[in-house]
Length: 156
Image 1 (cartoon, rainbow, N blue to C red):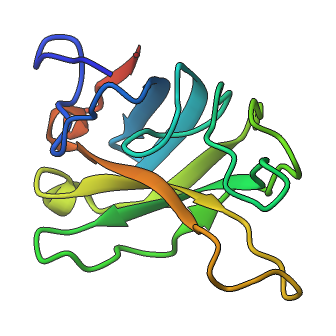
Image 2: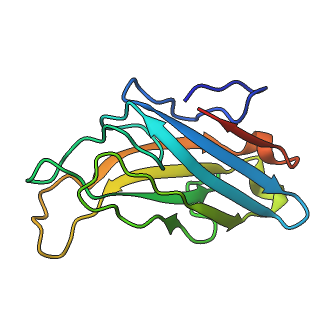
């Protein structure tokens, strides 16, 4: 995902060449609600990406597949989670999942400038699966600074 200040929030931790993600975010100033929709991704192999229609996710289970899900958290300047984290449903045995889910976060306007959205892609590990399997597939931090005034964006 590439971005400039004019196009949308800059990534705090830019992704490597493992893939790209289409992410839509909007902040409602009056309601103090951040709405996040992870639209889709492509050429995602492993490490450093975001969520929804992931393509080519690295198979990490014993059967060569993954059970991916996405966890979203808003974090403040001290790294603390603001409100509750949200997560998608795990998509069983799917290297190309399409989640189609949106999430809302309550974030006070006075802290929006210093907050970041943490997007973690994980492999669901069931209670009967080995604990040595890879659980964290990748993550990225996105600055929320440009959304403070009620702006929104949708881009790769």
